[in-house]
Length: 157
Image (cartoon, rainbow, N blue to C red; front, side):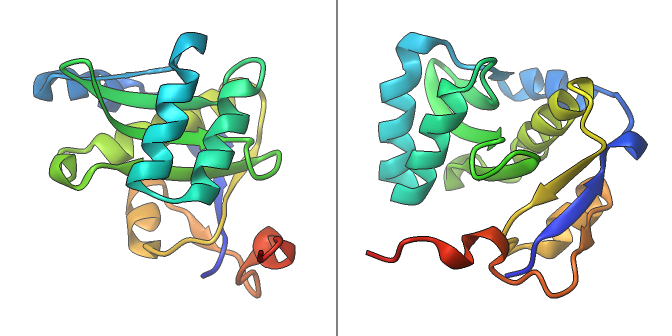
């Protein structure tokens, strides 16, 4: 799985996709401290243990470097950055029942626009499985010879 690169300086500073989630009753926002354990446990249960570790870091960063998607007081998705390494976007996840409403793209844009506001020129999306999603959403380009990238040296057991 290759890494991808996004030119944040070319990214339009348009937050409409995030506010449009309200049409579906979905709120995109940064979590608050008391939600930390709930979010980490939810990510571990619905996705992967490694992602739970990354969301833990993102919520612990000051300022927080993640966003959550909430519908009817229920967590349905998340995205983060500066968790695996500085300048890296991800992971991102949306519960299957809520996919196809633009929530993933809204979570992606929330993080990338937040990174742009902090002064990042580029974002790296690590170990991408669905290349076309990122190409279409933010004109991301594949980084040659980047398979497994920074995750190559991750502890196995």
